[in-house]
Image (cartoon, rainbow, N blue to C red; front, side, top):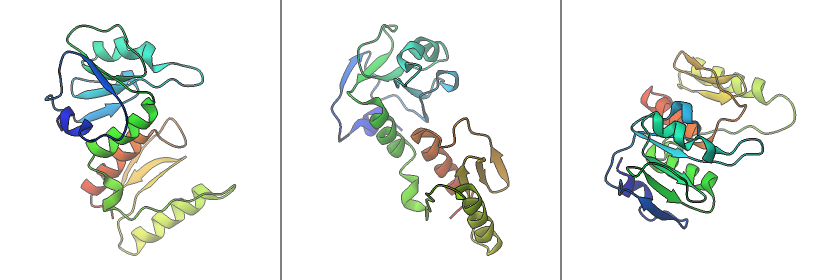
Length: 175
């Protein structure tokens, strides 16, 4: 999807600096510089321990040329930087658009509580699959759908990963 389509009517304030890449196409968005590539948008998120802005150069070296930041960064002249007050919100909104809002096409069940969430979620997915309703799972045991299993780093994946997994589930026939 073209970057101009992703930012069109985006409900957050931002400014663009650097080389105009609004007409470039993107297939991937990430906040992990190790997974950045030519078709990626890299979003710099400041966490409790690490600041994603420090990894922009690494993402650039992996081929990324569009960066979402909270402040100006030093990056090569052929890159574009989108500066916005809250990159975590920007990551979520851009992910929804890039992956074409997959949660609108699925029946999504969220499970909350203190104990038994993983067991309940896995049992729910198993029961649905056993009844002929293709279902996937995202949680502390990773991501599962259509006979595939993917390990996750965090109990709750980042918004860009959730939207990508949901889009992949749709492609695999999950409902």
